[in-house]
Length: 460
Image 1 (cartoon, rainbow, N blue to C red):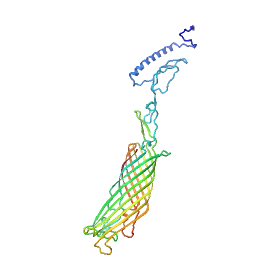
Image 2: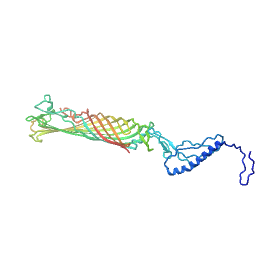
Image 3: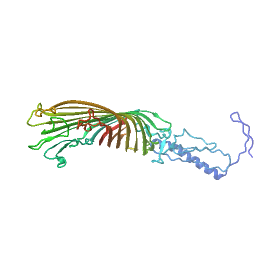
Image 4: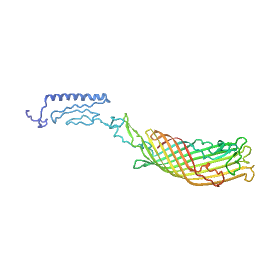
């Protein structure tokens, strides 16, 4: 037992506590550990100053003490990979701890570590509607190169040397030559309205489809010493001609106003690159859409049939038969599209049908003369007629297309298109061959178009 000593004025009063002496082996090991800690504490700052970019491996010099409630001073070296802080009773931490790293990863880069102060949190996946076509307005512009079906076949004349039954090749018809390709355009401008409760985009758009204009000319000459005749009845100046000529023009235009409801892509895949940046990748999906609206289309045609003789002037022999037709089709537009959207390309089809009311009209005029023909009948004629009709019509189109995304908001596209217009008065169906009806009208015509389309589309 130790003797009690009275405290001096410079000493604190004694505290009564039970003190248990440590074994000699434990004290030696504790002393050795303290010396190592002091050496490590003095060398570590120099190493950190010499090599600031070198990663320090966490080391903790602490041993369990056999006795309970023993106070041991432990020096904690800062660590950059310690997830949980180890707290030992009585331990003292030297200086502020360094920023820890947070384990965040993406499917394509598991195991990467990103500093907590660099990325506050894992970026949320976002719908591709905010990436593809992310603007409020969108539009497309395409050039069209379309072929047109041939005219309704009518026999205009033939050489008397060969009847049509003997030599059909020697017969002049309205389908003698095909039409050339015509250039046109298709332009769409739309505005995104909002999204419905099913996360589908709603939009209003206007589309111009047309600019298609066709023209053809044909002529027919009689064999030497022969002449031409025509099925036109009681029209002087055509029978006995040596040359027949035809010219035909036709054009198509349409304008649409549509409401479009289309599905959006799902949530994008966010992938972390090795440099720690996030990139967005769209998931492939089928995107259907519904199109409802109205369409106004026009088809206007003009056909001219002329005759002449090589040995006589037009003031003595000749004829000019002209037919002009106008067609307005207005109806309910219903259609849809189905697109396979990939990250860098897409392909699909789009179709619309428009059952319509067809407002058709035609005007005809015949001016001809054959001064050598004895009267009666009269050797000249000049008459005009007009007619109109309201009937059913139809407009339908189908597009097969594919595109490549240059950017998420801009792409180049190409396709093949079909267009069908029916229930119209085409010029070649309005011939008044027998002169029985004063105002002939035939609204049963149809035209079929098909061809290539090239263009671009984007949003802003």
